[in-house]
Image 1: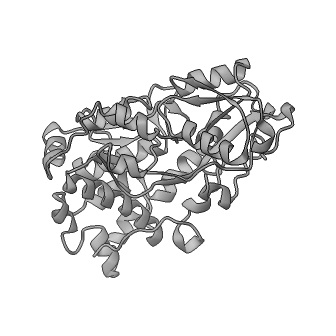
Image 2: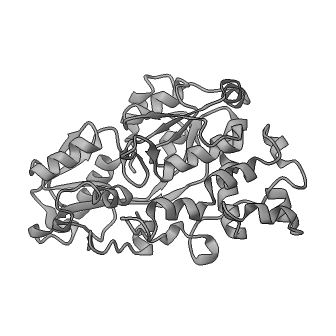
Amino acid sequence: MFKYTKYLVSAAALLTLTACATRDDDAAGADGDNGTADSGETLASVIDRGELNAGVNDQLPGFGYVDSDGNYAGFDIDFARAIAAGVLGDAEAVNFRPLSAQERFTAVQTGEVDVLLRNTTWTASRDTEVGLDFAPVTFYDGQGMMVLEDLGITTLEEMGGLTIGVETGTTTELNLADQMEALGVEYETQTYDDRDALIAAYEAGSVDAWTTDRSGLVSAFAVLDNPDDHIILEETLSKEPLAPAVLHGDDQWNDVVTWIVFALIQAEEFGITQDNVDDFMDSEDPDIRRLLGVDEDLGGFLGLESDFAYQAISQVGNYGEIYDRHLGPDTQFDLPRGMNSLYEDGGLQYSMPFR
């Protein structure tokens, strides 16, 4: 079991470790018109506007939330800033648009946001029917279950007859139904419009348990009144690969977001950090020189400046720095990287070659 006092998440749990919408919910959010973009349209709009419009979460500590100073902070927030740095040369040139699970897809489809960075799972229906294109996975996650420790429940099979809370407009309800049906467990479901309402209902005893991605459950320990009273079951209900999403059809913009994400991963592979990136500008390694735009204009192929990766790294940091800043051992979450480690460390994070 996962307790607040330990934050122990196994690598296996992270792999089979927020949340997303069912096929019906996704389709409904599109109002029957998914929309597409012409290649180059979004990049031109962002550059002309001088600001990136990013759809984010503002209720998920560690990933996307508003801190005590009124500033947006979190893992997903920093990826938005990295995209702004790579495209505009300014990590602060971001207009953060907080979106509910129900609003997020329509915001992309209507062009209200240029990129969605709101703990969104890459699924087949979203990649096709909903009309999204996904950049590389930034966080490998999976659905979990939180219950009161006093209930003495340790497995899903022991949850018969309980009422389980889920957030409206997410895949969690469908995943829950699939798993419980397979186990032959009968239960009741109660849905809530947003995460805050769901957690409040759980703490008030209106539901016996609640389910979302494991990252979201871990994040909740930061807001629960008595976090030591709750546990996360070891079992995971689904795979939830979380990735940035853009509107289908604009291949150039998808390439831009994709290669900025890869740049942050590749920087960690090379040992390039926010603090030492300038030291690597004189490197004789051709791969490093290409990444940082010293040799070859890979940025030009994307419609960006040659130093787009340098700007993202120098202003925001590499993938590992972003992870540690918001989720790592010096944070209240202390969330092991598990499958979000670099491939050379046994994880799944892997950049395509910069050449």
